[in-house]
Image (cartoon, rainbow, N blue to C red; front, side, top):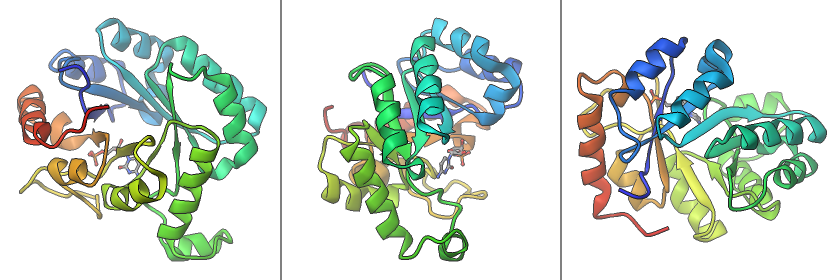
Length: 234
Ligand code: C5P
């Protein structure tokens, strides 16, 4: 498989656990996501080891700071060789443009988080953001697109709307995926892999349904065959 759509979230607090799961997966079947917990525990050395094993790595550190600092961090992520990195769209136009200018186009994918899916309307009002969350997500996704970012992280339930709003070139990365009949755990707005791809997702971020499985590789294979007939070329 040339372009695996699954990104496995390595939500662990040690390099050992992350590497032993990676050894049970295969780079042709999935990519890997390193987030704040694992990166804080194991740092860039772990990212280098995962890349050396042949995996594409999404460095999910959601940078949000002054433009110069975010640009410098993006440059380091690019130089580390990660496949994808992200920033918060709430950092604003200048920060997004600075991030863009730090990463050459057609190299490391630069994507933006719009609103955290943990925030409801009350949380948004607390910080002075008026309006429906869906409208704010749309506005932030458009801002990311205007600043020439490669895509956004969004719920698969928002993917259809964002595709209509922003066209097919923007890459949509969607967490909150659960296998049909699987447990939702703490995820509220979930979709199946098949539904997410049909809604227009490009990449599915999947954690526990794969990391806690008895046979993680088999689950990857099952998901890949489930979505194979719905994949668009990209
Ligand atoms: O285990 P699970 O499949 O719920 O893991 C989902 C991953 O996606 C976690 O790493 C989580 O932090 C991340 N994520 C999410 N919702 C977002 C953004 C990221 O669940 N809105």
